[in-house]
Length: 112
Image (cartoon, rainbow, N blue to C red; front, side, top):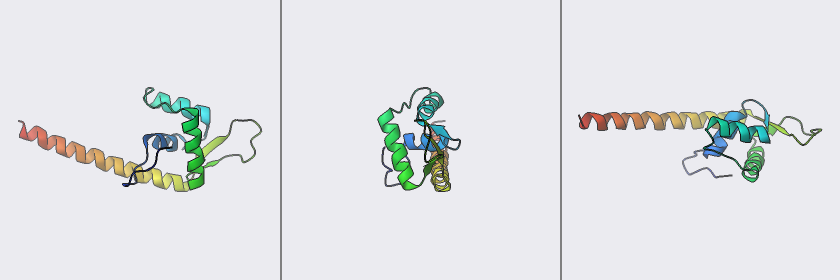
């Protein structure tokens, strides 16, 4: 799993995993749904995905729904802690977008 940068930004993969896990899902569904959401721009391999899921569980950002699943399909869901970090990332991204639009508008005004 990619690490957070010094700014606390989530990697794109972690962002999409947390986004998708607002509704429970197992690993294959995560891979499929994230690829679909991003028009196949973000494709998580099994090793990357399960490494990220393991790390996110250790941080307490996600949890397994059933600690003793009957089959191999383990479902995960975001925790309140994970939602907190996800919301902080949304605020950071909204600020980034707002600042980008402001700068772009100034550039357009100067070029007019």
